[in-house]
Image 1: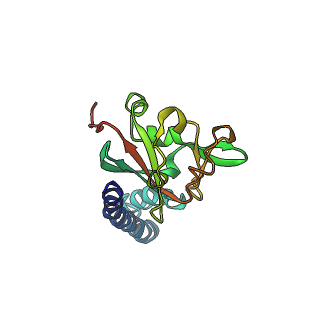
Image 2 (image 1 turned 90 degrees about the vertical axis):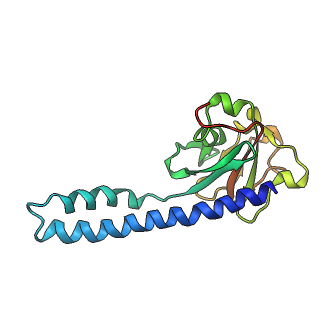
Image 3 (image 1 turned 90 degrees about the horizontal axis):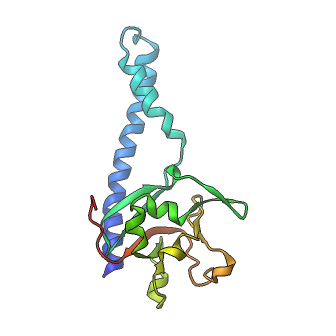
Length: 179
């Protein structure tokens, strides 16, 4: 039931994101070139809109969902906006950074976590307990592939080897905005 709710929420949010991004990209190209070059001398509108919207187009947008029983209102985080660190030669985002993009440190510490891959795979469906905050903080996600990586000392590489992770599941007491 939980997996379906998260995936349905993801499917509802994704088209909204695509529509919003698609409209901005099209209008930026058309307005920035047309009015800015020809008759746009006295009209600052064409230049401002074209430049402002067009600058971010070159950066990849990597949507990642955060949801679950403790996070009933799913949130989308752009992995491209999060800082990377070197993890064995691979630019990666710490899972702590990922979780703190949607939670406060106090909220995060009292919750447990799981992941869902693009294909629906989740280690918690295989009988594994969700990860506690201390363990989650030690993992990484490669923003290019969305594969999870763990320090060998934890022994999680085979159990929690999620490829193309799409959702961070959050379990525990519901997180209420403003708490």
